[in-house]
Length: 228
View 1: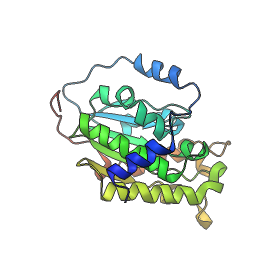
View 2: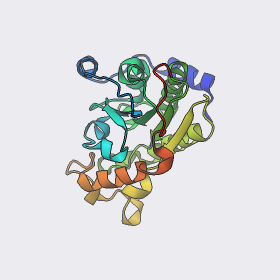
View 3: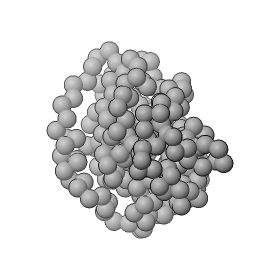
View 4: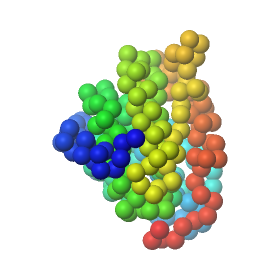
């Protein structure tokens, strides 16, 4: 398992700033989002790459909650670690669903670097929101990036390990999308993806929703106080 201190050291020594093109404009767009917290519903933040941004109806996956989507195309775990305040913390969520890692690998980061950034995200979230629940969604097995399958498997094993033995006191869960998105021969099912072989289509999101609708990934039923 990547411990908190080792994870932070690996990340800090191995990379500097995120490399996402157009990051500033995306952060500015999200900062301009009007948000008033409801008093009677838990808040769920879904954040990550374009798979999150294109998620049309996360409210149906988490009924009875107030959902904020801060995903954007090209997002990486490195971006999230640096911009956690703008993308997550300012909304004071009860549950945070994170789907990152695909783009980090595509940009050349190693599994260790990504897990180091993930450890930083967990530590900073714990410091600001100690009662928040986290769901780490696996890097998905997309046809267009299937050449990176072994790296995806290693990264997902790291996410699973962080969920089982988190370096923080947070309630961290791991959501494995692979069984739902693989077809015959244990390769990505093209029927679940757009023609680009990267983004999920409607059928793919139905599978995505079914996995995340399970009780262990749901937001708490009770609403925490404003300073939770």
